[in-house]
Image 1 (tube, rainbow over the protein chains, first blue to last red):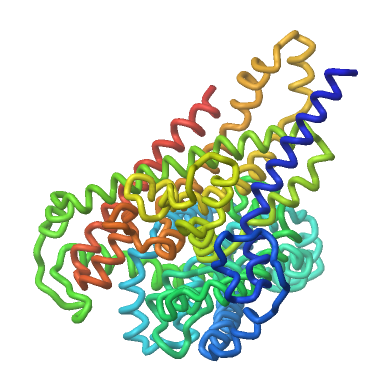
Image 2 (image 1 turned 45 degrees about the vertical axis):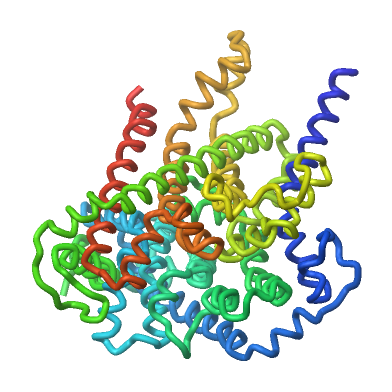
Length: 275
Length: 295
């Protein structure tokens, strides 16, 4: 009894410590964002705001280019997601349903693309986009982001589609449905949940992407991470506004992470560790 | 027209294949081509063929070799911290059973935080004098004055400091992935070993670790690659400074390309970098995963 009490207390303390260390950085970010701007760099720093102020948030209004960058990020992420699903849904179906050497090779190639540091293909991609006339366009950046999205989506979708019983399509085929018809009428509706999860993933991958955006977008179509990073160098770090921007930029991501924690683990391992 | 299964698969794969070939394969080809040419950023696609000169220059440059060493150190540092902490957390979740749910939800929270936010946030917390980390350390009596540790300004520790946001973000992923793996180990196996009188240590060593091998391999390889390729998180904190002390390969490649405009040499370094990652990943894969399946 005694030892179990001691054990439980130790465990509870351990858990509490982990939680505090874990949540602290982000909590501090949120706390700083609702302090008055001048308190961001107060000496000594305070954990909690002495006064609550939304000035850091209203200050964002002074930077229209930063506001526009959020719009750019949304447009690019949506384009990237749509394009990626268009390519990845049929490919994943092919890989998951018909065990051919081509499908296996395809999965392997998709995995190997993860080894490529974005910095190394960035310049050639820039050259390609320029010859296509796509530099400084939303489509250009979205296509670059799709090079990350497509392999990821194929892996995720293939693992979702493998879980769908063959009998469903066979029944449809017996009833006279074509192969492509089976994909559209059976597989896509049944896998809709998996496709939605994949879509969120691809969207977030694009939302978070930094290097391709840095190389491919000059003035008009900067994405949010680039605008935030440049904000730092341009205005000698206004930490107050920086924290409110960071909160706004990361909020959608955090909501999704909490809702889909298991799926995210599967997604980040490309489905190799199923959640 | 009757399609065979095989040609139907090829039709399904065709659009994605064409896309990846033109936007991943072709850039890689251009990269390799550029690595054998003297290409400047101002005249992309042109330049004289120079054979292996860019490679020779890269391999004899102490700055390249230093940043390769730093990349390795950074990766090992971040990965081992993430793995030890993450494995510990996974075992804790597993031991707690259902009650770990809240803890796991909290852990899920930094999973996808944008790297630049993590980098900025830690930079903010680590500012000398007025950063919260030094302030807390001072309050705890661990340092005498809040200016004692210059996390991002001291060349000796900066590589560790820039790894902190990475560790913060990624430990949760490692923990949750390993936890999923632990959950997939049939509990009958552990029970049977218990009945046979195996100690907790033996059960861990003989059952848990071997069965977890594939998951461990996947986690180590994927997170290792991601740490090695890290760019934004470090860039936003130090841009590779002070005096190159946190300049890892991806930052060096970026600088060589964009700031110095030397695309040829940067391409050669990038090609070597990818080759190195491929070899190390293959090695880890066969050492850890391979042994697990052949036993």
